[in-house]
Length: 594
Image (cartoon, rainbow, N blue to C red; front, side, top):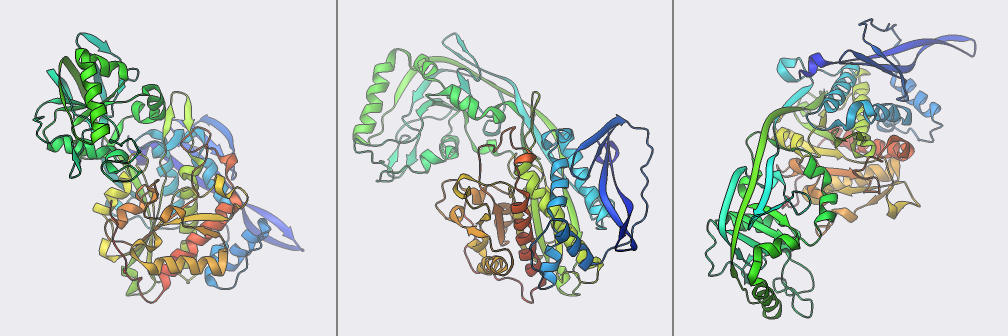
């Protein structure tokens, strides 16, 4: 559906007359948001409350002119409205003061409303959110960069994959998907049918210099059945790491599938003891289409695979069950690989349906004021997509990542206000709401390959993903933020953020998830990483996870807007310094490793 034609959003500011100390002054009241979607008009108050739904009569709301406010008036009004104890000491803090709880709540309550249907990439709710963000950029007076300067949208071409037919038949017995086995479209190539009369038990499916199940075994074109994880001895020491912790053969599922592909394996059956648990855990991934950019199909790197229950595994193994158990025990006792050939009539069906769809990154640009430095750009990102709907359940995604999206909208407005008052940043700033993050960082990956401004001219990426909640660790002190990646490529970036926080916001900066050995690997899991892979210094602001993460309970009423405002101001102040300092930040650290 054409995003320009299907959605029309008008933001109307009504003027009211206020009599203040005997003087008549004209100031704008709270905005009313009118969204026309498919013949229906949704009208919201400034707090995001839906006040009316009616058939669209195309009658425009009036838009009386309002006097433009000075920067000082704007900052003072926001602080006065919220009883803000923010101290204005310079231009940067004055601009930061324009970021308000009220505006953050207005944006977030609309973006995380049911009418936006969870903002799933490629779906109608995501298109509505894109149109809302674009409309805000237009209200701020930002130029249109895309489609010959006629649009705010960078179109991202995607391919959607989902199962058309997925089934498993062993020795005449039919097994049910999501009951007896499961598999993911993203790690499987489409195959209408694979039939064999032999399966090879291949231990753990590992090929390491310290231990290899493949040594001396011909598996080309064959189906193998393996255990997950890796062998440990009686003292709970791994034969691969030589210690009590597991290697990447356990922690990274891709490693075994990539190895199997290189060895010519046709399909991998992985024994999973608790199918119901993982079907529930991966409910979203198993029930939603997988998206990828164009023809870049990562499944080509993997052998096809299925996770099968112990009952299915027993059927595959058949009369050689005792021999397989003996082989497994010998592996664990001696660290010596064993394999067993199994007589098994097996048919695997993994046929996929592919569709081409589009999503949009939304680009808001504020050109720098310095004739030389304006050719350099600081990119501020937040993903605005979320998980969409499952049945009647809406995944509103207030914290993830309506909070980040609302934050960067406020930052864009502050930079636009600075420029409109003759005090604009020296370098250019690109505020970009990206899509497809929940599907694999797709929008930012596409921009990194097809940038509107040369990557070599990109000074830094400032990424905001989940900044509105408080995690369990900080329940007694909500004034914190996890900072990830700032020192990975440029120590200057780390120092700038530290200095801005010390001078202005005084949050607790928690670097727990910035550690190289962080098991959560958050550094690799948000949009900044696609910039870091290109050598661009990147900083990621994150409040940590909570019990509502990726659940339908991630809703607006649970957001801590006071905390969110303070973080938004820190993000702005760090970006402001990056955009105004004389020297571009240095690259003086190692580039990221995946």
